Structures are given as structure tokens and as C-alpha cells.
Amino acid sequence: MNDSKEMLTGGDILVQCLLEENVQYLFGIIGGELMAMFDAVYRWGRESGINTVMFRHEQAAAHAADAWARVTNTPGVCFGTVGPGALHLVPAVGTAWSDNIPMIVIVPQKNKMIDDSFALQGNVDQIGIFKPITKYQRTVRTIERIPDAVHKAFRETTGGRPQPVILELTTDATFAKIDVDDIKHQVRTPSTYRAEHYPAPPDEAVTQALKLLKSAKKPLIVSGGGVMRSEAWDELREFAEHMEIPVVTSIMGIGTMSTDSKCFVLQAGPEADVVLALGCKFSHTMGLGQPPRFRDSQKLIHVDIDPSTIGRRNKWV
Image (cartoon, rainbow, N blue to C red; front, top):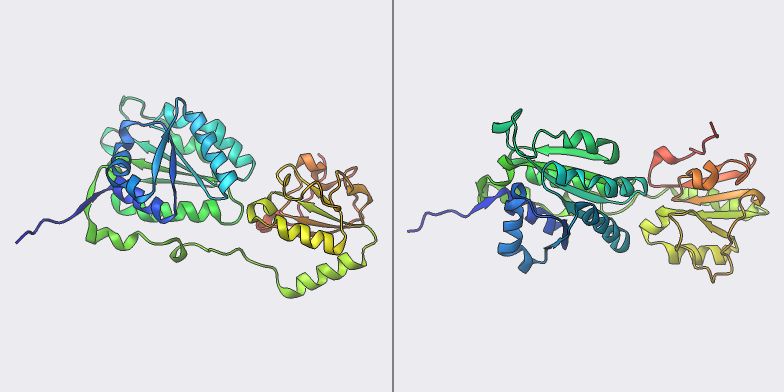
């Protein structure tokens, strides 16, 4: 009788969780502290649909993850080794943060036995450095906490306003081993730990907005990055052309309205009396929603996934 049990490393569990999210590529540069993850990818991950894409510099890897997210509308995953490798990711992660791009940043950390020592590339406060440019930060120190950390990371990067998140995994977690029967129930499908559909406004609010647009003499639609993120460009064009409402786009909304549409215009903000803003946060490139790009007397219908953005047309200071 064979009493041997199947054992999984933290790297195995991490890769399993990423596969549940249909992650296909990990962009980065190999490092010893993440070797358990690479080992899982090369032992069985590639056959299951996940692989690594190696670069000469971590910054390029993070930009690739950013590009993947923009093109596929799914979170890009990048990684770098402890210390300098992680820091090289910062410029591209900052770009993703500014443009509201979903990204998972995976970096290792030295184990607790060599805290406050002169460890090679260690003693860098990676979480503190990434905190201003990530929506969620998590340090994982035990193998049992890896599934929950990955679930929360994807929930945060895809929920509400999409932005990068960072997972810092110590070697205590990634190189540890655990019986598959003790951990398999924690590796779950996305539908069990995060929302798969975006919230919608109540029917009464939609009806009120339509009445306002129909009664307007010079209505205008401002299409932002939220339309791109929702892949709602066909619905936007159909609605705008049916209602015969001109459409302008923000920088992040470029491409959501075809330039060959009869409703596409370059600028019409100052002339409009009712503005329907879709997924637009009125950044400085949109004049903060203030004169001369827009008028204070305009009625605004603001639709956005992030409640904190609603009504946030700031005055110049």
C-alpha cells in the first residue's frame, strides 16, 4: 500500500490560482526567490495554458503586461526579482495606475529568518514604494494564504476602477510544501470570490436621463476609458446615431467612437446644454470639466463604475 501524498509548493498553488483566472502569460525576468513559480510553470503549467515571457529589463516586462491588459481587457501579470528587479517595474506600473489599467504585480521577498540583515538585494520596502501607485498591496508569508491573496488581488484590480495591485510573496510561502488535500479547496473559480458583472443604475435613473437628453437642444456625449473597458463601443455608436447626439472622446476614450460616424466630433463641450459623460473622470486633459472646455450652466449626466468620480468636476486651483 502506497501512503505517499501529493505535495504542492507555494509556486504550484500560485500558478493554479493564476490559471483559474485564465492568465496565459507572465511577463518578467527570472530570479531565484521566484524559482518555485517558474518550476511550476515549466513542470506542468505550460501544458495547462500558462507560460512566461522573458525580457532584458523589468520595465519593459511591466509595459508588456500593461499592453496585454489594454488589448485583451484582462489583467496583465508582471514580475521581477527581489529588490532592484522589483523597483525596475515602478515606471510602467505608475503608467498603468494613471491610466486605470488592471495589472497584477508579483514580487518576491526574503524570508523572515534574514530580516534586518545584509541579505543580497534585501531590506527594500517594496510595499511602501509601490503603495502610491497600486490599489491594493499584500505580503504573503505562509503557503496557506496564497490563494486568498491571489483572489483578493484579482478582485481589487478588476473591481470598481481598475488599477494595478501588488503581491509580495516571501520565500517561506513560495518554497514551502503542503498536502494537496489541505489546500485544494482554497483554489477557487473567480465566480466564487468576485463579481463577474458590473452594477447598473436603476431603471428610474435611466428613464430620467433619457428624458433630459430628449429635451436638450444641444446634447453631447463624452466617451471615456470606461466605455473602452466595458467594450461598449458598438452600443455607444448605436445609441448616439439613433438619438442623433454628437460624441467627443477623452484621451482614454479614443477609439470608442468611430471617426466615420456622423456623430463623431472633435470638440463641442462649450455649446452643449446637456452632457452625458460615460466612464470619463474629467482629468486636466478634459479641462477638469470646467470653462472654457465646458460650461457651469450645463446639466451633467455622469455614468461611472467608481462612485467617487460622480460629480467630481473640479475647479482650477
